[in-house]
Amino acid sequence: MAAIKISLITVCFNASSTIERCIQSVISQTYKNIEYIIIDGASTDATDQIVNQYGNYISRFVSEPDQGLYDAMNKGIMFATGDIVGMLNADDFFPDNSVLEEIAAVFDDKNVHILYGDLDYVNHLGKIFRKWRSGRYTSGKFNWGWMPPHPTFYCRRELFSKYGFYSLYYGTAADYELMLRFIHKHHINAFYLEKVMVRMKSGGVSNKNIGTRVKGLFNDFRAMRNNGISVSFVTVFLKPLRKLGQYL
Image (cartoon, rainbow, N blue to C red):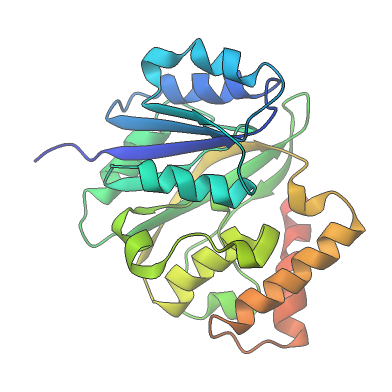
């Protein structure tokens, strides 16, 4: 049986301070059947220079203007030729060298179509300050504010052509909406890998200020409504409230 090919997509923009750590965590993986795609939004810093230093490890590098994070992810998916697709953004990195090896081993089971795991948030010094432990998915969990961390989300490539790509309509909630659509709406089998798969630097786009948080909550509401969740006060507010436990 041919080894499973993983298409790993890194999206970046003016990421010169973090992109090298991200790339090094990829090329250090013990699993080597990787198609590594980097989509850059026409950075004006040294991002492209850093990426080009690792050209031998990168299958495709595109640097051009885009419509934001999720538009860039969609570009990467359209370039992808692997069996499995996953995202590792420029601020993210693998905590050890066996992550992709373990992911590939799970997807050897043809009945597994989606995989997700656990995530740590780190500060600018690399110190862990928040732990996102997903737990196993059971039907209906999204109704109670549950979601897996998107940086740990891997799926079979054909799911995008069958159920759609990231929708820019949902703004910063596009990743939540896609996982909701695949897992909750279409009942795609999801496997929980009980492992910290990614370490993520704090300071995401959706958490910049109170305005972006309110807008993000509105986008969550739209994603829920359009994917079969009966939206209520409990459903809408449990999602952000679940984050509190991640700091303990």
